[in-house]
Image 1 (cartoon, rainbow, N blue to C red):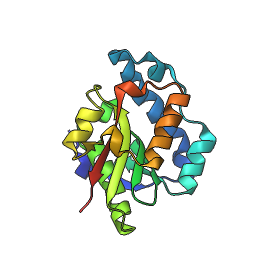
Image 2 (image 1 turned 180 degrees about the vertical axis):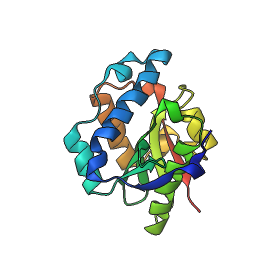
Image 3 (image 1 turned 90 degrees about the vertical axis):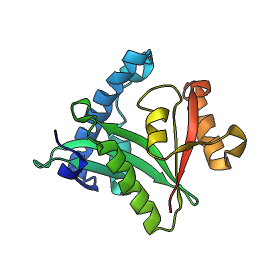
Length: 175
């Protein structure tokens, strides 16, 4: 079994856009197993959005020895933190620490800009969501500690129909 050390990480390039969408769609299928069929049935991100994020250098991909994309992390730089928008790895490559390595790539990019925190929002009970991120050093953010940026993001989630009662914001401090 290959571990993260057998993969390379780079900023996504325009030719990765369709693969990123395919990985997102495939990874979303897992949510059917925990009753979140709305996510499993959702179409992947719009191609235009993926291209915009690639142009902004806000997607890092994991590629195997054949230069095949097997996972990605999409993030958004904020003044005080980098917000991890999405992390997906092909289920065929799960359990190889690729997700953890992708998060570490974002942490390195954040540190390079003197940003000392990563944040994200995820499902509280889904095993590969909040429990996974806790193992990667993320901690829950109490509702009363959400800043205006995260409150706005939560409001946008609610407007999109996400059940925020099942979700949690998390942060990881970077040394």
